[in-house]
Length: 236
Image (cartoon, rainbow, N blue to C red; front, side, top):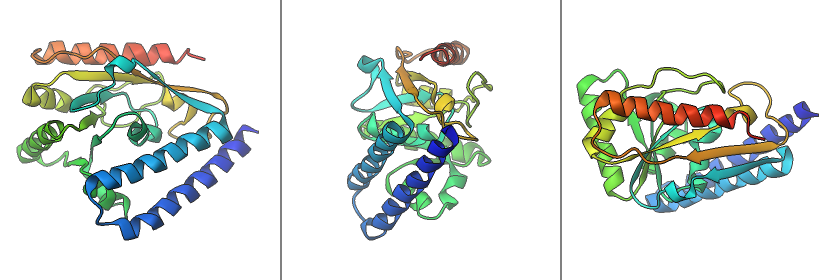
C-alpha cells in the first residue's frame, strides 16, 4: 500500500510541477515578487498533495523565531522538500545553491529570475567574495537567506562536517543566524518511497547572535541543528 500511495503521489507531483512549468513560460518576465508568489502557490499545492495522498502533515515549531524581514537561516538538509517548502513558511526566501543547478532547463532560469544565489564551489576567492556581497544584499532587501551548511542532503541520523561558508556569510553580514532542525528525510527520503502518515517538523531554534569567533560559532550552530534533528527522529 505504501508503494502504491507513494507512486500515486509522485505521478501527481510531477504532473503538478509540469503544469506550473508550462504556465511559467508566458510569465517568464514577471517581476521577482510575482514569480515568488507563483512559486508559493506551487509549494502549497505540494503540501496539499502530501496531506491528502500520503497523510503527511507539516508542523512548524519555534514560530517566534520565524523571521518576517531580512534574516540568515541555516538548515539541516535531508530531503528535496527542504528546497521549496520554505516558500510556504517565510515571506521572501533566497537560497544559496550550487551553480550546477542553473543548468536544469526552466528551473535554472526560474532560480535566477527569483534572485536565488548560485555559488561556484571551485571559484576560489572571487566566488567567495561574490557570495558574501550577494548574501548581504539579499538580507538588506528584507529577504530570508537560506543556506544548508552541510552542503548536500544527508540521511536521517547522519551528519557530515559543516562547511565554513556559513561562517563567512555570518561574519560578513554581521547578522544573527537562525538554526533549523528537521526530520523531512524520514518521510520524503533521498531515495525510495515516501512514508505513509506522519508529521514533518521544521524546528526554528534560538538565533545565534552576531559577533562570535569561528570555532565558537560553528560549534554552536552544529550542536543546535544536530541536537534538534536527532530529537525529531523519535517524534510521532
